[in-house]
Image (cartoon, rainbow, N blue to C red; front, side, top):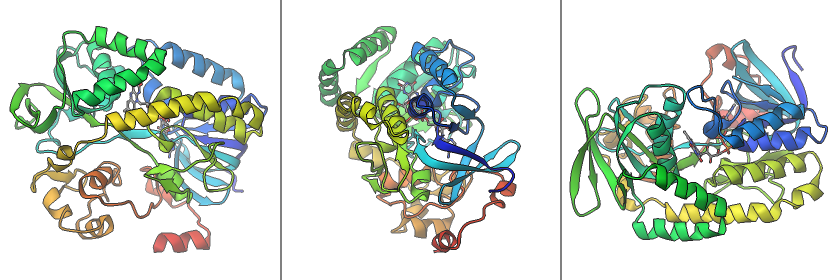
Length: 430
Ligand SMILES: Cc1cc2nc3c(=O)[nH]c(=O)nc-3n(C[C@H](O)[C@H](O)[C@H](O)COP(=O)(O)OP(=O)(O)OC[C@H]3O[C@@H](n4cnc5c(N)ncnc54)[C@H](O)[C@@H]3O)c2cc1C
């Protein structure tokens, strides 16, 4: 172990709801636990630091429990690689360090799926959840005309947050058909808490048009977005806006699980009843195993934390609750599945890789993501394909063939500290 290495019995990557719940369960069992997160705070995407708004009750409860649990938060710590068995390499502002573990729980969450359409790179076109996060952190949206478009319940949560921050919501365009959204609403009857949440959202957003079966076809405006053209497949119309908040649901952050050789199934990390992955001593919880929302992430995190701490009997007691949230997760996936039209919006001259300025016309001339990357540099910019790689899967059916370190952007000086074992190096070179 080098001098800048730390060692814990259980290490958790991700301080969102899944990671927090896992940390509490494991640390309350008397294990030495560290949670690593690349942000400065606890709470992940939904509960991240909100100087502009008071923390919601769920966030307060879990952060308080975490603080009493004895688990350690290593904030601003980006896990960039897994160079050897039992070792993670992470970067924080003071430099790179190794973190050694006996058991590892991956709770790396998800990010928004952004799909290309003409004008999607104009200033003012942002992810729906992304804009909500900016607003939570105090970015001024008051008085701005905002169209929210895309798919999934996150659109409503984002619209609600933006309205609270003073934005003028023009409309919400949900690509899923009304019949599917209504069917999803009926399935919520099994989750009274979600019904209440939905009713609250509907009340707070009353007066804002919510149109189902509607999606954006282009954004226009010259130097920044000034309008968006929407369609329901039969007619098109244009709405003026200062901001277009647009997200097509979430994609799981599976780069680190892949770097550890965890098996995926249908794009998500495959886990067993204990949330254990295909790799010994490595568990996974929350959105990387399926997009199921905060309650699903919390229960999976608790099961993973208890199982990693050897408290299987207590973990088993959570199985029934988890099964309920898994049914909710399946209903979400069915209701908000993408219609084929939204995968066909990009024109040949639409920028597809925004880091490297590669057009859709160039990317689509290749049959594989790897060839497209090698020939055009798409996916090789600062986001390392996190945006265009996910879009390429939806739009062109390209699969992600491999993951190379770093799994998050880090400084070159940090990268130079990686010492891989020979087998790993061989794997990376091929
Ligand atoms: C932008 C955005 C906004 C959202 N807003 C809402 C909302 O308002 N309401 C709602 O109900 N749901 C919202 N969601 C969905 C919500 O995040 C999930 O339903 C749920 O909270 C997922 O919990 P999680 O613990 O699985 O992941 P997350 O909350 O995503 O937590 C994962 C954490 O892992 C960290 N991480 C990932 N990789 C690494 C690494 N390599 N090294 C270090 N740290 C790493 C991330 O920074 C993050 O803090 C949002 C999602 C997104 C993407």
